[in-house]
Length: 479
Image 1: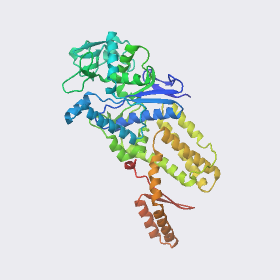
Image 2: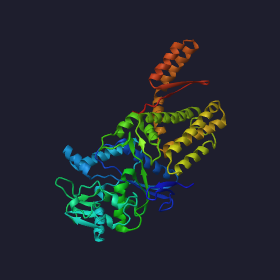
Image 3: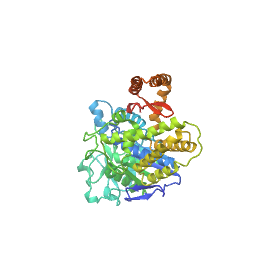
Image 4: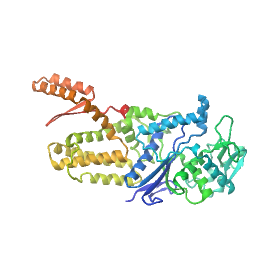
């Protein structure tokens, strides 16, 4: 079947048919940089990173854009509280965001526009809406006439009579209609501002993404993404601004991820029930965190639960153990062709093509590993076909888990390999001493040597062909 996505606007799963064959253009609403990221932010970043990775792996030429909102009421509030400038706060947390995304294995965007770099384009869109009588000036503010756009509410599927614009600081006394929202906000003392035809001020939040998306991807780009909490009013207003001014289609597909919850509540800085993303990476590491994010379909809510994170750690360990053992058994040599991995590749692709069903895709990887473990014994005994199967399965696991899902198994094992190379002479010396103790039936000494190695993170496995060892990954702090 072709790749399909659930489109929030059409409220159904539909085949992905891009604007240009073989190319995919994606815009994802990025962070408002007023603090450090939490694990809720990590979820949307990973969901759309996997979407991007999968489309790229499937052969699409992907142009991926995600913005930085670097002027906002929350940024100004923090700057005032810390008695520093708003640009300084924005720069500090933009850098922090990008560092954290790198640690989480999120690929850097092709373009990362900042709101303050597109002020003139925002003013041009505002002027166009005023010229069409779809916006009006009021005391230095410019407000969008919501009822001038007949399709308002089509994304959130709400009746216009039931809506409330809950995020505006522009006074209700300035609005013709309570539903109207700000395109431009008049300057307040001590706040960042830019000159405009309506006096000094700054853009409203919603107009930023309307402008930045089309500035870098053009009208009718393929996929607009973000969290479900952005459907209304943010994404609804993005559509209204752009399509009221220009007609046509703003974005072809709307993809939204479910929220991370703490119990029954959405994780939110405003509520204060957050787990910092850097803290989580330190504790559980990139592979386990990304595996945890993969436990729920991207449109479903995901509950923060340390037991579920422990399950994710165990799942990563199972995949990594097979890769590590396969390296010890078959190494990097060419073991010939094998189609052992093909059924698992097909199952993985079928899952991903079905609205990016990552939980089912990871289940396919565990089936792959089960087949791999079944072949390891024969491969270790020298069976050529089993060695080819193990090699093919290990190659497929690296590709699907790391290149597509971004789990980071190879990085997890890389540190162990590097440490192992440095300490090989010492470990081999101790293993020789252990073997002599066993031959002399001094099992207490042999066990003591093994225990000392285990305390140092070195796992010894006794096999019919002799002992083999590896360095256990050090955990989250090393990722």
